[in-house]
Image (cartoon, rainbow, N blue to C red; front, side, top):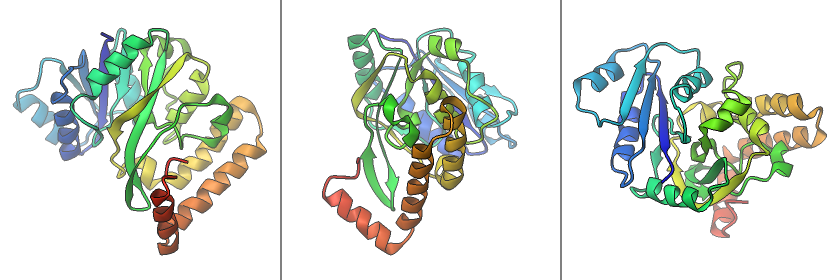
Length: 260
């Protein structure tokens, strides 16, 4: 079986962390390690980790960080080999057999360096399941079809391409995608993660689109396609905040097109 290490970053959100830990602990196939990277300014999470019985695979760091990317990097730096899954505080696995099924998938695809799958999240106040295979030719469209909470990436990939760029507050995952786009990849056609949409990627969605444009053009130069697509996403996002937009999305979901 493939070695899988889970990294969970957290910041002053004990209840969300407990939900994520519970989802890890019920897995029928346990991870090699589950690192908690705690940058909290309050003692709640540290006290909980120290004062309750934790499984042997759970390890943690309690210290300030410089943001999401820095917290990711602290966890990745402590992994020696195998695949790494960044499961943020508040996110959970879709069911108790996810790691078992993902392990089998990785065993069946020994050549790959990273993978992604489907995710269940909220769009227009409705739960939907989305996710498509990564297509490098569509990279200008950003992260819409390939969700970071479903990625599993080999440690060796980070060693070759570097860690997450701490200069980005939101788009560090898209920046990483632009770097690893040519690595051997496979798509797992199943739901891996249920996404907690209260985090920065949802509440600052519009800001993330601007950051994505900057990132794409850093690697590939000025792009009309990228700028037009990001503008399209902004319009759609604002439309979905209206009753009419939510009705249109409900119709799209009814027609089975929510993953398009």
